[in-house]
Image (cartoon, rainbow, N blue to C red; front, side, top):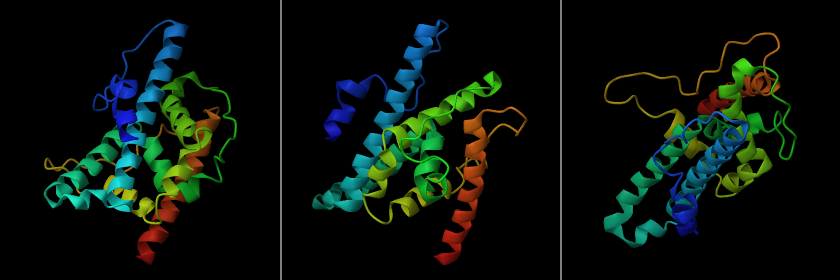
Amino acid sequence: ASDLVTGPLFNAFLGAGKTPPAKTTKANTDGSARASLAATVGLYTRGVLKYIKVNVLGEHRTDPGNAAAEEVQLLTYLREARDRNPFVAEFLTFAPAFEPHFPAGAEMPPLTDPASAPVDGLLREALEYCCRFRQVAVWLDTDEDVRRFLREALFEEEEDEKGDEEPPMKPLPPPKAGESPILARWRNAREDAMELWGQELAAE
């Protein structure tokens, strides 16, 4: 199955987080959005397949010399997917907080604030993957530790060698009247996610 993800179908989109070039016409903009979604789907699919291989099936242990490399590759795949669209990682990791706000199969409200279009586009892409494609269930069905693994790997990782400190979650635009309904709902879901995060840390 992993060959399908890394084969010709997704090769054009798996360039270490590269974003398809910006277009100007509506048709090309729509095509760029589809290409961006395909890239996100490809990277997260590659990540979940590697997670299953390494953490669920333990197939990498059949070759002790390659086991450590497989584990490093899993982290690399997850972080490349996170860098492509961090909101997907946020939803998957804190799914119990996000699902009440964005149930599977729910229709997305229209874009009402053009100024929030860039972040709104990423949020919509995340909801396409998590809710419309129902991939949250795929991730959560892997094993009971997947959310904790994602949290530790993507949100509790150590600062990089340069000592630069970035917020664990991608910043959202300041709240304002008339903002995108998706952005407003995501803001509320994130508050619940932060509370969930604290509860889980306290319980460990």
